[in-house]
Image 1 (tube, rainbow, N blue to C red):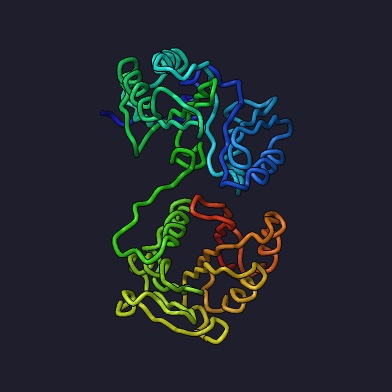
Image 2: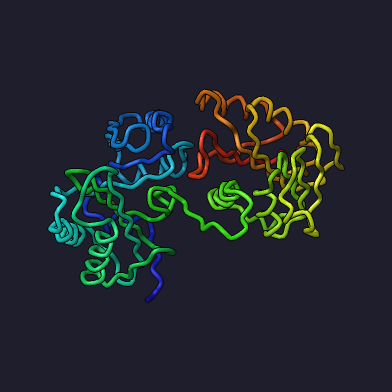
Length: 361
């Protein structure tokens, strides 16, 4: 298949309903209120409708096109909105096998896919609602339609375009978008990593997801400091990426890490260690401490991070005072650290992850 490059204007021509700025947004469970508040702040006029309480909702922005709304979402990306999909068209369903034909016809009449485009179909459904078919069967039906009608190529990864389908009890909500426009190219933003044999902890997934979502490549760093490292999930990933890692924690690291030639383990409290100025180009911290305790500890060690160095920090959201907590963390670490992006990742729970760069002057 030939490569297909999708420009913004060309994207508009592929959807027969660019005027509607309707979307489905997904957040981590329990943080739907924060995600809704971010959408309210982003759009002057918006209607919000809960689909799954505290997790998934629809929003319809008034007086703005789909393209304009998408630009706002991507340029001023919300922290607690994990994933969005446009709602370009909706079709009534009765949850029987006949829905699959309806979906095929809807995709055929609603979209103008370029020949050779790599298209991923992502289908989600409401929990607790019975359908005569599975989401995968829905995907297969639409795959068949895009091949037959547009000569497009169904793919799972590396898509040029995503067709998103959200099935409610009565409607199929369908949208076409570029992967980057959904904030996450995983269905619903549910980033799935395969657990490895001998993996130390699932905390490793948080750092893997942060690397991906923040556009980082840990292979480009030479010397990393991992504060509160035990049992070593984050340390293990950094070692795999080729970093020299100094891990600090009074608790023990996993024994499988201790003989690694690029590991220095200091079994001490982070407040009791001292390093050379600018010794590290990367600092990571994933501790179950209160945010103010964490910023004090990190702040006292920033002398050891070189100017322009990267800091990845997990922030616990105490009593879910999310926006206040973020402001306090940024204030506590300024002006030494400059916030690049904050995101509640799929692998976060009652927390979020923040990406900082150390100021150069």
